[in-house]
Length: 549
Image (tube, rainbow, N blue to C red; front, side, top):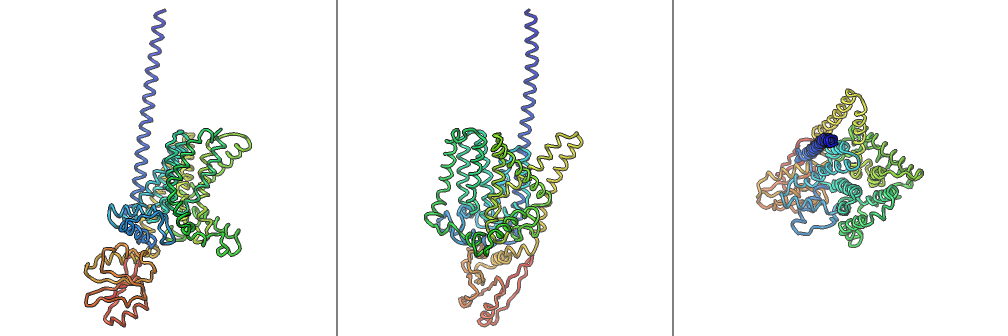
């Protein structure tokens, strides 16, 4: 009997050791997988940062006047110490982005890089946020593929290199929804607090963010449908979520709707499809045209503004565009099917929350574009759709990776290799498209007013004691990068074309720079200074300005 017990114990110990060995092997495999994931994410983020910061002084070719206004507000805020929640110049802008520029100027000095650094970092962090969100919603592969597509997309690279406040919108959305869904899954209240705080900050970014509550309403309805007693079980977390939104958004709400309600509308009323002056009495036709244009820009006919895109091509390259289209259709069908099953078959499925988020997010963030009738398609107004567009594309590539596991070894390896090859092709195509093809086009230089940046660089080559006059037709000096990046030149005077009589150099040597050939001003100057010689300066990419000495 004792021998049987002894044998039994030996068998138990044998299987126990074998089981423990298997567990250790599994744990090691999972640990290696986590390490590999961290390395891949780090490489993707590093690639995205490189594509956003490389050659930043020359691509895009110039500083657009709207960027110069942001810089001027930041410089003024640093000088006066008056950092604002809302900056009313240039049709009004939420203040967070300008204050971040001011911080970069204070820490690292005034330069093209520091002007664009908030946009560069926002675009880079959006890559990380896209990975975290897509992984939380689906799996690691969707996260890696979606984040890579964001990292290398021409659309994403382009705006991440322009100092526009809209770059903060995708960043806010991906991290807010990541922490929200992470909180729903883990039931940790601090995730709801973080998500709410980030969403509240969204009010300080870009006017398009104000449509976000629509996403939250649909998502709440979905959560109520898929979770029994959702409100009863989660009301403390929801209160925390709402409270943190209100706390971080309160300054902007106060500024826009109480202290300065005139800021709230910005210029949206003048370009809305609802305006009779815009739709000319044909509201339905105007709306349908605008809505159609907002959809076709991803695959067929893109934004025709050279600052925003590479016309006439769509925003997405062919491979990413096809992947987006299939992923979008798949998500839409899943959303409709799961909604039908819940409403008519009483079947609850948590995946409904995921597809509700993605589908509603996509259409909601198109609203700022298709509800306006100016310059559509418009890649900037719809920038809030950027992360979800590439998550849709990631779903398509992940589908083929999943199918590869169901095939024979050879077919599976071929499928995986093709997916990897397509992702490499997308990366190379978009990188070359931006940094070589697009950035070196004269029409791009013209759209960014490159001559203004060239004049700014020319002034920096002049002796500090030489009197300089800049004559321009721009009605706002803050829109001139010449003015912004030469603020330390105390002997430089900026004049409008009808102010040439203010040139009083005395006996001091002086130079006059014209941003364009202003004939009236030129005639007046030749009468006053017959000895003046004008030189037409032709800089690279067709940039032209005039020097009179």
